[in-house]
Amino acid sequence: MVGGFLLAAVIAVPLGIAMGVYTPIEAFFEPFVSFARYLPASAFIPLLILWVGIGEAQKLTVIFIGCFFQLTLLIAMIVSGTRRDLVEAAYTLGCNDTGVICRVVLPGAAPDIAEALRQMLRLGWTYIIVAELIGASSGIGHMITDSHALMASDHIIAGIVVIGLVGLLSDLFFKKVNQHLFSWSLPR
Amino acid sequence: MSRLSIRDVSKIFPGHRRDTPPTQALLPVGLEVADNDFITVLGPSGCGKSTLLRLVAGLETPTIGEIRLDGTKIVGAGADRGVVFQSYTLFPWLNVRQNICFGLREKGMKLSEQREISDRFIAQVGLRGFEDHFPKQLSGGMQQRVAIARALANDPKILLLDEPFGALDNQTRVLMQELLLGIWEQAQKTVMFITHDIDEAIFMASRVVVFSARPGRIKAELAVDFPHPRHYTIKTSPEFMALKARLTEEIRVEAIAADH
Image 1 (cartoon, rainbow over the protein chains, first blue to last red):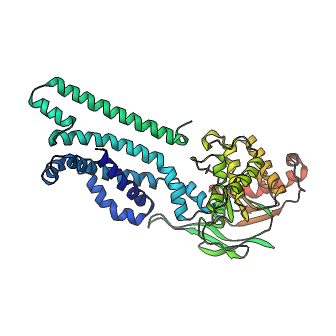
Image 2: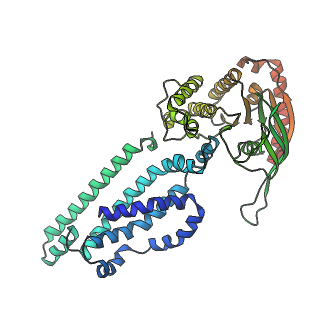
Image 3: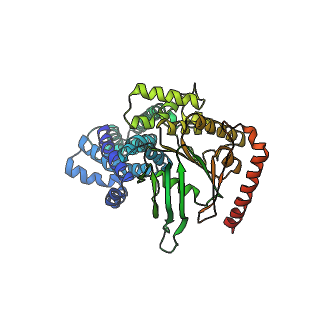
């Protein structure tokens, strides 16, 4: 689960930044990524079961497909929203293009990128449950499907509560880390 | 010797879409600024005076003509021209000291040297004790003081200010004018200051350049001969009043023209 999310983040963050900074790169990737983001990751699950089986690899791929395209576009949008006046100020202070990207665009976009990652983690959490419900050999989703067959409603409800709690805790954790790292961007 | 030389520079902005006509922001403008001169450019809003500053800063390219600084043609922005903008442009993720050291770090200067220079400018703009504050913790006037220190720390050949006190309340603005003038009187610098405030233009300048309504051109130039150091009380002197009356008349005509 974490692997699929990390993989999506590791590729999406640089790609999104490149798309946000350089118009030609955006023009090249944007049509495909925009199209791909509307493909529900859950629709790929049957295909993925055929191709990669019902193990961890399947979950990882579902999460990757579910998060990667959304994340790329979100980050491209955040980066292209960099304040122009700050960029200009950096140029007048002697920065070249690389300096502007490293010292203005990246630090300026970092809090919003971290927030986007937090939102994506939430989405990824939903996908993993769906993936487990449909075709997996282990996990909470799988346990719920098993309980369904046994008509054990209490187990299903317990499963749902656990899913909610784990989601909530990881979200809170992410939020605290972001607040700590980017205190400068919080309202006074 | 002329440090900044603006030769028949004009600027036309293309229309955003095909059916919108291009905008002539600046008619050919010629202006020579001597070393250590403090000129203020006075004009009604939207007259193209900020465009002129952006051209000198290298943030825009002239459509016709060229601008030279110490004989070298200006191409693009660079650290030899420090700019203070009207909007607050401190980097919000850096504290006061880091903001002031931004350009020094870009040059690869040693940390000890950065510290020494930033200490000097922090003291000069009266922000001792605020080194570790972040921009959001500072008032507008303090932020602009940091912006001035940040531009000066780079030791530019010319300091360009684009209505830097425009967003401040009147009392703060007056204090900031005195601060900037004080800095200029101590450490001689070539300064180009854009404003629409007549008092401000006269008080600090050794020369006031009056701009016409758009498309901007230089309408008049006025030497201001009050001796330095200047005290704020000169603002009520008869000579100041006479200059102000004259400039008010010049600007009024242009403001009316701009409004029609």
